[in-house]
Image (cartoon, rainbow, N blue to C red; front, side):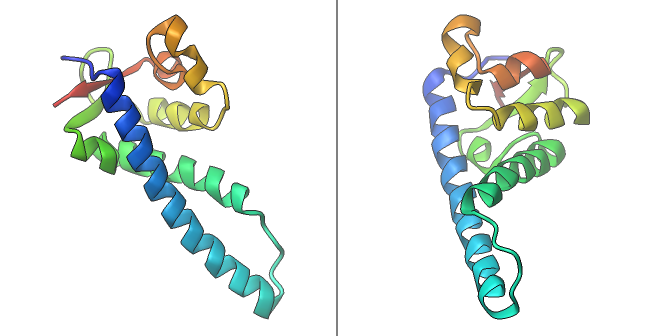
Length: 125
């Protein structure tokens, strides 16, 4: 198991965040239409964005062990033994990603906080 480098992780982040933003933009536009014409309650964009981050990563990493960006960079999420992570580990990864401080732990732990707390790694396939 060879861990991916920092550049691959940044590329994964940029690709996945761009996809999440695009999906969220579409959902938010649809919701704004419903708000205008059917008087649904207003929900700010950032609420949809944070929810979409959680749903996106939980869905893709829970089922396929990788997000679309990880498919492009030929990497996947594994647990410490190199096997498919348990679903609770994926849920924990997705929840910790919602915190602002996730990336600030890289200099201290040599990995993001979501990997450290869930005891997972991103490795090359």
